[in-house]
Length: 330
Image (cartoon, rainbow, N blue to C red):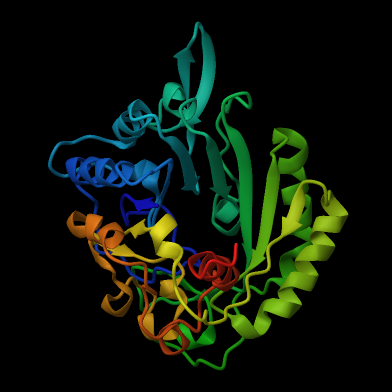
């Protein structure tokens, strides 16, 4: 899991990244990191981030998202992309016209194994999700939508909308949302149904805001009703209630490289309240250049005391399975 950049074209209420420094990983560092992991059996890469990965540009070399995908594909690795997309432009490709995001070439789209598009555009001024011409024979298309209330925070230029009252800085924390999820359920159901009928995705994932654990049961019920009304064969609700794992092993098979250059055991460490909406040092495994040491040492829990450090973990079930494997139970 590689977070190429923290630069983003949206500021989303549910985002786990509260502020952005404008960081981007160096292209050569990313490739050296992936080559290191390939020696230990790397099969696939997810391009994602606290920003929008298709906005990536290496400050040292000028290489962009297309160059990253080309280089990973040349290494024989599968590539997944998580993005909120961008406005579309038309390209001439294979003697025909084809739409893709801004600077993303159609040939780049064809090298992606799967794409999951955040439907955050439905919450913003465009009221739209930009979907490129994806070849379903080459790339699996999916969508994701997070249910949340909107609280506008004028004092925070980096995160114009916040997730909960506790995130508000400049106004009364006891106020009601500027826009509640309940008030939008009918409209959202119709909008999501449009994307199912128009683009025939493999799936649309609906999930609650993980930064509001008390609201998860209610939100999951509301989302399931939406899924049932649209098409439960395509639309599903993902329930990932936060709970501290007994031990943390996920980082061995799914290490997360953040824009700061640090490797982390998962991307849910930012959900812990003590992390303050960022990839913080208590959860950092190592610098990317030291990742080989992770696989050269005896397997151990990557977090010393998850019960204290990781109450916000949404990968507890995965860690339970991996702990069983480590202990010889599977």
